Length: 387
Image 1 (cartoon, rainbow, N blue to C red):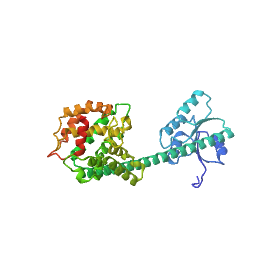
Image 2: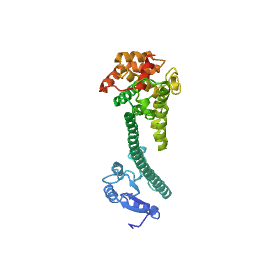
Image 3: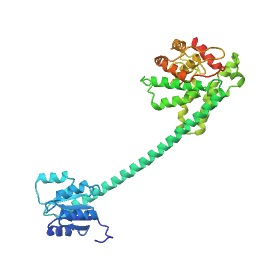
Image 4: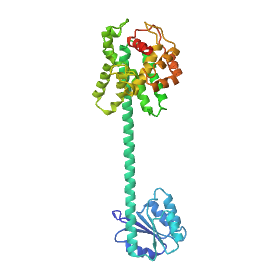
C-alpha cells in the first residue's frame, strides 16, 4: 500500500475472493482497500494498522464476523472503528445480534454498488464527526481543568491576600487600641458562634463562606480608633461631652479606612471587606434606633453589626476595667437578655442565650492576664447595656 495514499482506508474481510473482488471494484477509486480472508487475519491486520472502516463478513471459517466485531469493540484502541457487516443472512435476529455487538450497519449480499458507496460514505462521515466531537470534548475538558487549576491558584492567592490584609489591620488595631489582644480574639469567636447558631434560621441563610468572612472581619470592629488622639483614647477618667463626640467618630473613621483599602485594590474580589465595613461602621447602632453613628434601627442595621454588638457588649461586661470589676458570666447574660428588642436584635439575642455556655468557655480560654487597662468605649457599652 502506498504510504502517501491519503484516501480513507477500508478493510474488506470475506472468505469469498469473488466478494472481495466485487467490493474492491466498487470502492477502489475512492478508497484505499485492504483484504483479509478470515477473522484471525483481519485481527492481525487491524492490530498492525487500523483502518478507517471495516466491511466484515458474518459467516467465515474459524473466527466468525460476530466474534471479530465483539473483540474489536472490547478493545479501546479499535472500538471506534465503524464495522459494517456483509451478510447473506436474512434473519432479524442476526441483525439484532450484530447491532448489539456494536456494529454500525448491515449490507446484504449480493452487494449493490450504490448501497455500498452510500453506507461507506455515511459511516465514514459519522465516524469523522464522532472523532472531532471527542477531540473537542477532550480539549474542552483540558481547558476546563486548566482554568479550574488557575482559578484554584488565584483563589488560594486571594485567600492569602485577604488574610494578610485583615491580619495587618488587626495588628494595627491591637497596637493602637487600649484593650487587649484577647478582647479581639474573644469577640471574633463570639461572632462566629452566633453566626453558626443563626445558620439554622431560614431568614439569614448564612453559608460557610459568610461565617468565615464574619470571623475574619470581626477583629476590625474598632479599627477606627487609630484615628482617635491618644489624649482621648488613653484617658483613664470620664470623657467630656466633646471628647465623647470625638470618640464616637471611630466608627466612621474605621469605615473610611477599610473602604480606602478596598478602592486601592480596585477589584470586585475585594468585596470580602464588605463585612468589615459594616461591622466597623454599625456595631454601635441599637435595635431601637438609639445608637450611633446613623441612628439605624431594626433590620436597617446589617446583620454583621448586630452580631458584633452582642459580642462586644458581652465582652465589655465580663472584662475587668479600671472603673469596674468584671461581671460574672451569669450577670452578663442577664443584662444581654434585658437588652433584647431595645439594644439588641431579638433573633441574635435568642441565639446568644441558646449558646451562652460557649461564650463563657471562649472567655475562659482567652482570659486576660495582668492588670486591666482603661477602656473608655467599653465603659459606654457597659452602661448602655444596663440601661
